[in-house]
Length: 284
Ligand code: DHB
Ligand code: FE
Image (tube, rainbow, N blue to C red; front, side, top):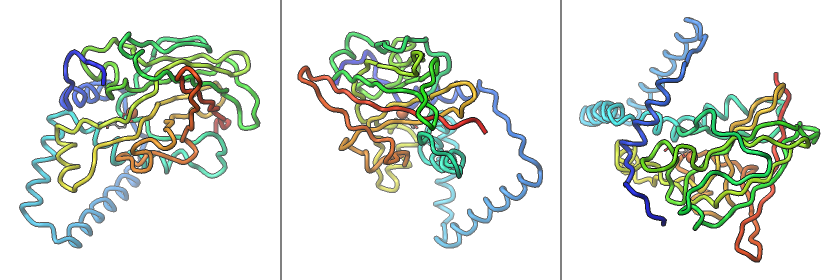
């Protein structure tokens, strides 16, 4: 573990994730009929679970209290992206006929407009990050027929060795381990970064109490987040994981897919090297 100046808390990252999300413009053109159908089914599902388990008044009050607290701690983005987002992602991005690279959840820590970097680059990192094992990540952005897409962008963001994301924990430079890589004419990239570590979702607030209450664990496997874009093609939001890593087969966020697991090889100098390419479907 490297030394961080301050110990971030669930309160910090929760509130920052909430502030970020609150400032995004969110809207949906859901009709009244559809809203009515969804809300009726949702209440029916809640009723069914309550009946099945004969939920007590104490349990109901604990739930009410927990929901108030999760709001006050700003942890709704954390809790929802861990426990719900994977299902929404599965419904919306695995449509019939798509043959490109698989998506995965975005999670709460994406930021737009990370600084642009050339196709061959090193991710912005501090001296202390350089103590981690270097990871060379190279590949190509193509269409589904394998034609390179020059000028495509690969937005990459991931946690440092201690599991913290820049701008969501104190004391980390603004764009640390975040970048928008622009591919060369053939769609290729070659990025030097560091080997991410398994990530513990903030466990000292209501999301942590929730996990404790059912005897679960708060861990996600080591991962890198990516958004890959090229005009005329369907944007991919995904994550990449590491073969054999802790929690790769037991992710609290249920967001691992076999196609997204990397198997880097270590060279003579202790660098991890991996090739992974992205295939983009045409826009609908
Ligand atoms: C959370 C954090 C992540 O890094 C991620 O990829 C998904 C969820 C979270 O803390 O909620
Ligand atoms: Fe993450």
